[in-house]
Length: 327
Ligand code: TXA
Ligand code: MG
Image (tube, rainbow, N blue to C red; front, side, top):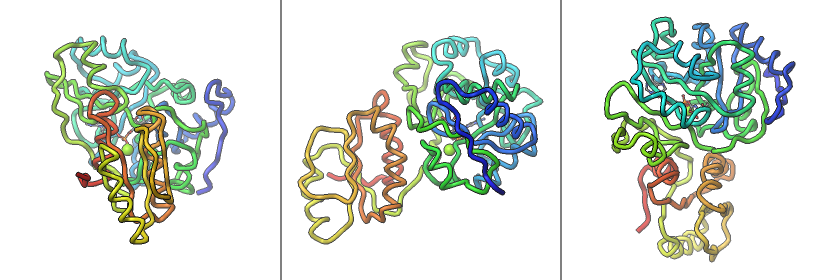
């Protein structure tokens, strides 16, 4: 298949372009599109054959359900059988934005979207291109992240092309995404509500809206990408510096990504100095892809305190490292 590239202005997407993309969706084709978190790979939620194509294109295991992207709470409700009333407070506070709500699915939600389960995830993205696509489609857009299964989520159209060129009909190019890590996935089918995946909205932010409603235990985190390089995690440069010396002396190709204020004492093949946690979140998946492209032997990632946005970052950093921590 020849993948069509369509440029979409990230602030004011051209209605003709969005119509064109929506007509591919109506024909049962797949369209990759930017959201404020990462790129999504969309199919119309009401065309089950199209939804099944997502699993084939990504090589995604069929037991992993998809999020339906909606243009507001009214559309979201049409996919839900039932939800606790407090959910509306969360929607008011965080939509449009990176909060996915998992609740009991309405009967008409295709089994492929739910991966056969009783629940469905819904979220209203804030990215103008994502919203315009849903608007022009006129229905919800089922979409996982637009990467091959097992690869880091894509934060730029280049990442989408690397993974899915020739496998999908359209890539809507709206530039790089904002947050760089995925939405927070919240299960509201039981109390306390549970974060299934930490993400761009922190537990502290949720708690400020509905105090004492959330389990602090984070369950069933999905697997995350691990680069070819051996990944080490450090929480203080003091632990890093002697190890770096040794790595460089033994001729290793190393990469270091960090957000604290210090200077690397040795040259690194990949040195990513981030201005803070938000910048680190936005660049983390790019760093993991770059580690492979540059054939690094060792990648050193600074890990933040697991509070606020740091929790979602720490979670992904630890997964990338399969738990190897310096010190
Ligand atoms: O930011 C995001 O969430 C991006 C953008 C494109 O919206 N999407 C995304 O989708 O990351 P995906 O499929 O790569 O990750 C969604 C996560 C998966 O871990 C999936 O298991 C979980 O949400 N999820 C979705 N529907 C669910 C359901 N019905 N029950 C439990 N978990 C669900
Ligand atoms: Mg994903």
